[in-house]
Amino acid sequence: MSTDTTASVSTHILDTSAGRPAAGVAVRLAARAGRHADWTALGGAATDADGRCEDLPALPEAATHVRLDFAVEAYFEESAENRDSGATVFFPEVTVTFAVVPGEHYHVPLLLNPFGYSVYRGS
Image 1 (cartoon, rainbow, N blue to C red):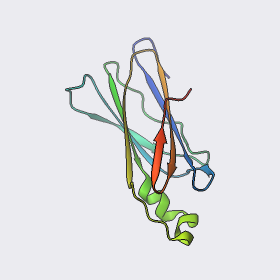
Image 2 (image 1 turned 135 degrees about the vertical axis):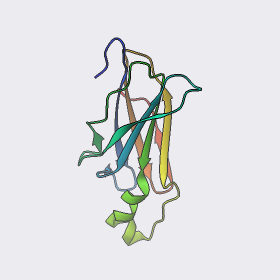
Image 3 (image 1 turned 45 degrees about the horizontal axis):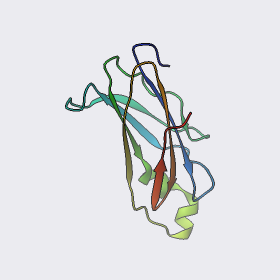
């Protein structure tokens, strides 16, 4: 949860090729304090049955940029729909980097299929 001095982040993934949430996708969270600062790994989680990551770590007070790394290759390799169709994965990982300001919540949905993705700031 965000405070006056921190921002907060949540995410979920929808598999548009299967028409349902993407469960079991590993998501890593990192942050930095300024565009020239080094990234600090904060931890991660995996998406639940609804495709949501409810337990991402809190951001540090000084965070100005956040990075979400989604490990999607393993998800598609384990997906029965894609094994049966012989689909390969063009983007094995998806990295989304965005700027944050204290006191704001950032919900970042990922719409995913084996050959493309879309991301946006949700609510």
